[in-house]
Image (cartoon, rainbow, N blue to C red; front, side, top):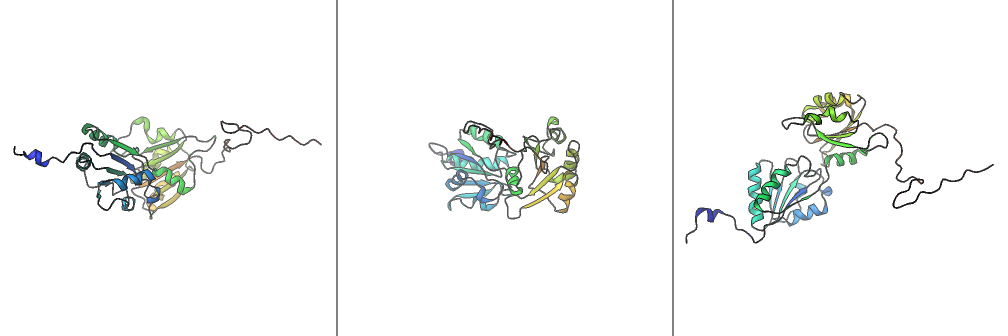
Length: 275
């Protein structure tokens, strides 16, 4: 029987489709890629990475025979077609995302397409820019009795933000904040945060964290827009809003001698000398 055009164009199907791994690449430093993420890239027949956000050095560990492609100019359908063909032929795929795939990573729509095809997938977490920026700046998000929470959010742009999650509404909590994808309109970012936070609130502007071109700039909230303009901080900037920075908080009780927990009994207070 002669083959039809659809028969000849269909990719060869393996008995079991290959695993698709959504790999968190971290902020840009290849040494911050997890061991598990690196292994997934090394074993992949297809490495599809977001070249506008992930440096080529992160995927340089791919096998010589692997197909390594930049997904930046591709649509969702085009990316899926590449992943589908490789996976259905039995090959492993590493879909490499900047930071962690769970944050602004377009993960849900990609996973839905794979599930519809019966293609297995998994997520390998990565270090997100907020944590990398805090490490680079030597700061902590939590300060005892001042703030014990971190809010990760973004300024509204072409992607809408629910009104209950507006920057002003979230800033009202007085918690530490990591604001992504907002350098394009630093004036509005500053204005919205100042509705709820004092002008002297410390801000760390972290640009291209983990890249050789990394820049860290400290400023006050009321000077945030000027800082962005002065240093030409455009895309790939995360803003750490730190109400606890520079304020004297209570020392953590975790290692206090009189503080007991599951691994250590509290020590009795030393007796006062009697005279």
